[in-house]
Length: 308
Image 1 (spheres, rainbow, N blue to C red):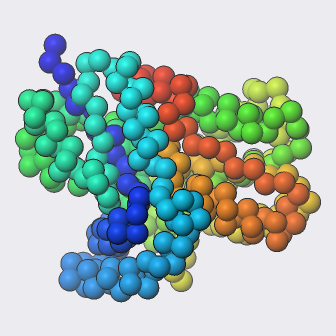
Image 2 (tube, rainbow, N blue to C red; image 1 turned 135 degrees about the horizontal axis):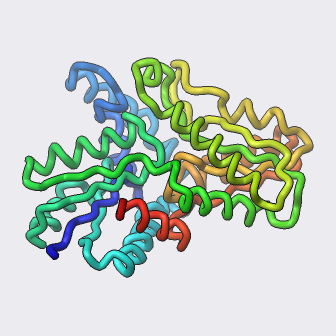
């Protein structure tokens, strides 16, 4: 049997200030992110935003060592998948930084592979993530492959077990924590136009509530909030900022429900910025879970998801 290619899709991440500029430029030029009809207007807007934000964003990267861990963690995930999926040639394609889709396509063509499976590393579907990454790969491939795309996998039992195991591990022996599932926010207007992201995130939280109820532990409450709001427009709510106000003198565990691989939004935004906010709001204890990353249970989940 001839090999298939498995392409892990993600947003990418910066490993230097120059690459951060590339990331921001590409992200704000993405028609699924900035929905201006005019490419010229979008490009001008992107240039302005990058000019205004680059140094500030780079300051946050310096606090986490000048790079995101996303690429290194993704490489570890690929290594583990290679061991259990010998019938696949496995590679990655990032949306906003290298390795881009063109690089993955060149690697696949070199292997003379025609069957390609795209695995978006976003558990829930959004036009801003899944659609953007899948469309980009398909456009760049110029119809040279037979492409199959794996659907959002937030309902997968093994994947949800990996999440619950991490929460219980972080909770340790204590029974007085509240859990907040923190999802990356998107503008409300995208949901109003039919983006299913909010609905799928809410469904995912309900599934996790049910699964956590079977663990021998006492979680005081389970909540959903949204992080990463940018600009003055209305975004999905409640915001994590406001949610944390409810937990003065309480203990909180935050799980990044919309991320598979740790990145600047988890290790800086959640674990540094929101930790500082939680302290100001007199949250008694604030703990952040790791993403599933290359964890063994998640790798088993992917094996199952890919084989369906």
